[in-house]
Length: 288
Image 1 (cartoon, rainbow, N blue to C red):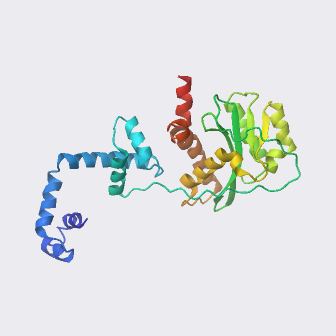
Image 2 (image 1 turned 30 degrees about the vertical axis):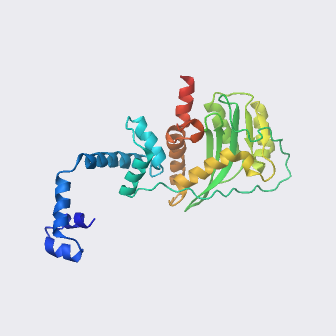
Image 3 (image 1 turned 180 degrees about the horizontal axis):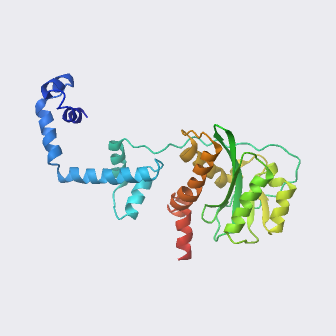
């Protein structure tokens, strides 16, 4: 860094003065300069790798660490050891957005009927539209809260339905479910699992499930781990999209959530449960 500063400011300060102030030697500076002008093959390889890594990191919007970037490089035909990629990221001072501790929210009390837990934490499905899970979360903008309801297919972890509103009501979860039904061409017999929230227990929502011949399943009272996949999705969304960002309006937040779900999460984000490919790639691979 010292030598780079000296080279950048030779038109302003003398090399002798800068070496003295920066506690550097002129001989060391000139050796460094020769290496910059005639880089070794190893240095050229490092420079090329750094360029690839930086491009992929920017492309992931700062969400990918060395394991994911290593996989992205391999997909592009560039095979590097993960430790080599990690060293490149360190040289470039690149650090993926860090996960925060998962703190599940408890459920609110109500007197509405609840369904049995038919899912029983069996978060694996062997075909599409066999098991769906749904949940609601809240996101903050300068204009106030925005509530997001999502429906996830456990087969591929794809978010197949979602809806947003400034009110946490039954129509919010109904809209998310109807989007999933439309997107998946109106399947019947799907096991739909949620928590015991009043929106999911409401008469209107239960009638919607019956109309489309879906099987209702609900988590145990206050047990968020019965719906861990949905909880995990919201946690990931908040870490990768929300934390550290400011949204001045609900509309700006809506656009960001739309892009995250439909582009970043469903089509690009790798999932360990899917063999480190995206939900869309997983479904396409199974069809092929």
